Image 1 (cartoon, rainbow, N blue to C red):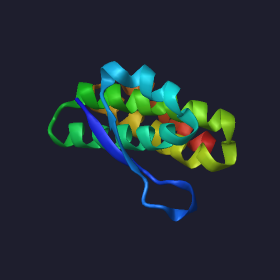
Image 2 (image 1 turned 45 degrees about the vertical axis):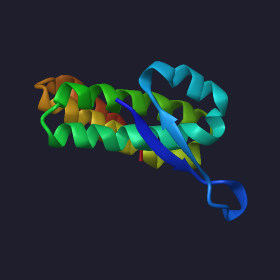
Image 3 (image 1 turned 90 degrees about the vertical axis):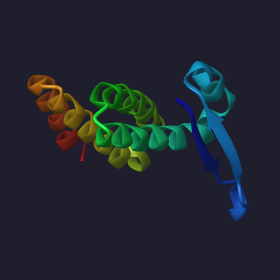
Length: 117
């Protein structure tokens, strides 16, 4: 699996394309997490939706949980900015858990999402 996304530059400039591969995740996050992690989390969140759409629910859960972990860290840096994204990731994880029949865990995740908002 690989992802590519555009990271906008400051001042409204066009930006640059970033390529993400799971085996390079540590390298990417260490490069410039302040800039890249919000986009990486969004890309992973979107990928999890695509996985669900093609009945790859276990893969969807894995990518949802990875996006959630990144967003938890982002909330630690700037709660006001990233709480809505955290709630969206918690909702996404809850849906994936429910789809796998893990109802108790799904309820816990969605309750945290509600509490976050």
